[in-house]
Amino acid sequence: MALLRHPFAINGGTIDNTSGSPLVLVPGAGGYSLGGNFTFIGSSSLDFGTAVVTNTANHTVTVSANTLAIGGSIAGSGFGLTKLGVGTLLLYGANTYSGNTIVVNAGTLALTNGGSIASSPLTVSNSTLDVSGLSAVMTLPSFGISNSTMVVQSLPSTTTNIMTTTLNVGGKTNIINIAFVPLITSYNAVFHLIQATTVIGTLNFGLGTLPVASPPYVGYITNHAASGTVDLVLTGGPAPVRALVWAGTDTGDNGPTAWDVQTSVNWTNAGTAGYTTFDEEDEVQFDDTSAGSPSPGLVNLEGSLTPAA
Amino acid sequence: MIFTAANYTINLDNGGSWTGGGLTIGSTNTVITFIGTANTHLNATATWTVAAGSTLILDDTRQSFDAAGTVKGFNWNSRSATFAGGGTFNFQTPFGCNSTAVNTENNPGGVVNLLMNPVTSTASAGTYSGGFTLTAGTLNFASAGSAEAFYGFTAPSVCNQWRDD
Image 1: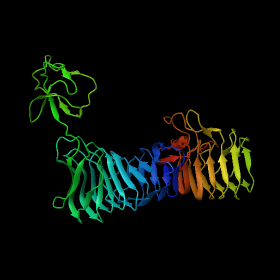
Image 2: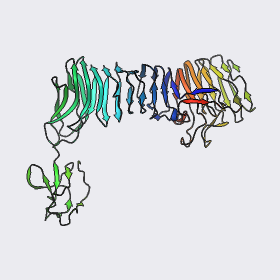
Image 3: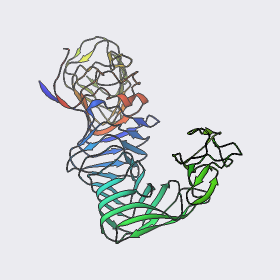
Image 4: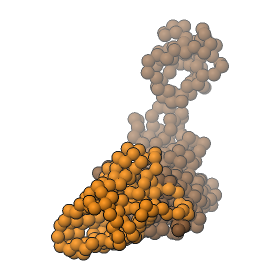
């Protein structure tokens, strides 16, 4: 008798993890079929792992506490997901479903690592969108946000965190919390957070929190209606790191081969005359311009060093 | 089998077919525990019904669940089972051992607790390759090993079921 072999089909009901610790499910090659709405109670967090998820209609996932993570690609042409509940739904797979993603009435939608919903219009209302763990730009066909909070990490200044064709903004000020900023080489430092081709409504993003630093970061959010961009501008904070180039010219101190901390003047700093020492977190570059090292290419690392790049 | 208002521990030691396969715990405050190592196995599609307030504990250790046989359970013999009734199912050992069939939880108000021990390796094929459908009720991953309860599932496909009747 020929039968269709099913994977783990979730057509309704409730799932929980009461093992006392977060779990990562191992569902085999069958993956998941999402054929109904379900609730994750969230006594402890649960990760569905990286198995594929086939969504067969528009469905609601309620996360009542902690985190429900889905790392497999969620497929389903024309079908979407609505996330409810105060817990976090975390997506870390490259999802292909093309229906709407709707996050409403509290809770968090988080995307991390290579997570994406590039084919899904996203609407976030009275909730939190956390993309601070993404390793790449988030692209969306459309992005609607109102009365909500975003959590982002500032990407290098030439990159934009979220790029969307249409940005629909509403409600009161939408708060952006900055979870991380890369090393600053100068102030003012500008980071592009959102870029939209078309804006509907009035851009109303405001700065929430900045990463803890000493001295503390100071900055603001700019809403550029004409260009459809939202930027973070940092006007102050920890001393900027420098971009040093190896010179190998110190005939005193620890010598022309020594890479040490604040001792040997074996570096040049672009835009500054003369030679300088290395400070922790400085960016360093070794190229062919060094004229001083007695043995070409010879550099002795003195102790523990923490360059920026 | 029908149980009402009494607690029993039953040793499934006859090694025979459970023809019909049905089970009903029809009243509240009843706890029924199945243990055993003999090859007692389902021989037909089954519905197991546990009324709200009652508990079925399955702790049979006959049939290998994983290739190495480090975890064992009742022999489901590729017969589908539905868990129903609004009560509690405590699977101390995994369900689905030796099964290409699909099991279903349709247990509004009830709970299925997966309490199995972990297998030594999920690299080799498991003996529960069929599938599981959650329709209603709570499916609770209640032990560390329960994360591997469905590790043997294979890719969705049209296949032929095989049974060792």
